Length: 345
Picture 1 (cartoon, helix red, strand yellow):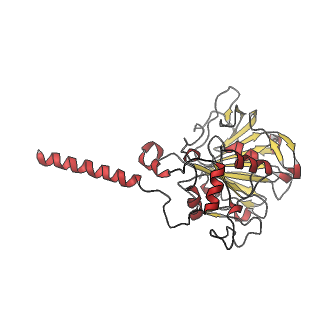
Picture 2: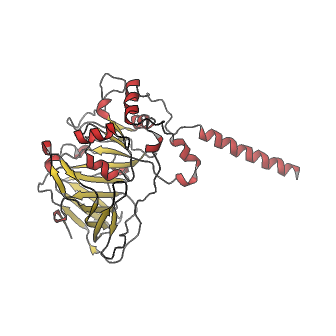
Picture 3: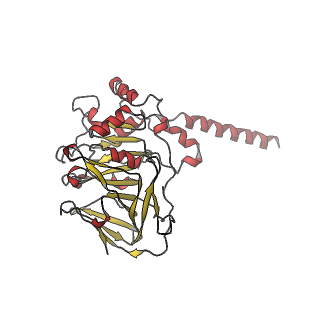
């Protein structure tokens, strides 16, 4: 009886020791350079909060399967597409039009499951921030419009790290430029440096979220839609999605270039452009409601999107007001000024 009691005490002490050791380990600890004092000062101007510690998530079982999302602005110019990297690891990709009516992406990825490299990284616009706000408050970009930069520099709702600030061939961090892609489409963020930057993110802006963000299942009805086409009025930019039955995912082709991304669900939202500003920059409102099409499982469901505030996620409902179910896996959210650009068969 005494030996059993002693054995039990030893087991309890061993478990407690393991918890103490685990709590002292930061998941991003490795031999990487720390941000300079100048960089740290910039971070304090953006948000005067203590640095976050992601290691606490390993102590709670409820966090283990919940991603810690961060976002990266991705270029989609015709010269950038052949070099797209890291999109296959994204939880969600939102695609918007920018000036010239060429599209650009913002990729939402899990900070605990980073790609080896992601890019090409490009400049920020205000409506990208509005689109990701329900899930993400940490954004990596390379420059931005005056409105976007003012918002992230003067506000505290986002931690936005401008990679142009760090890109220096002879500096401490070196250059983020990659041989092969033509400038300015040659800026990429590698995993090692990604982890270094994440150590500086305030805790309140790097939190786990419930995922997937929408209810999963197969709704009743739906019309067959194994091929989807999006007309950008230019063969260099037109997009098609082809359903792959075995994988139950979609292959995206953009101007003849096949994307590394493989979405399981494609949500297309109709959002009018409010006005076009200086240098052709677009402005749009991502609150209110509008038409939507949800594609997955080789079918399409017509419905509406609605949103009361930019802190709320988009809600997708059918004609009866019931939520439209999504497919588990990568979500591609495409925002267009009119659904007349979308056809399927």
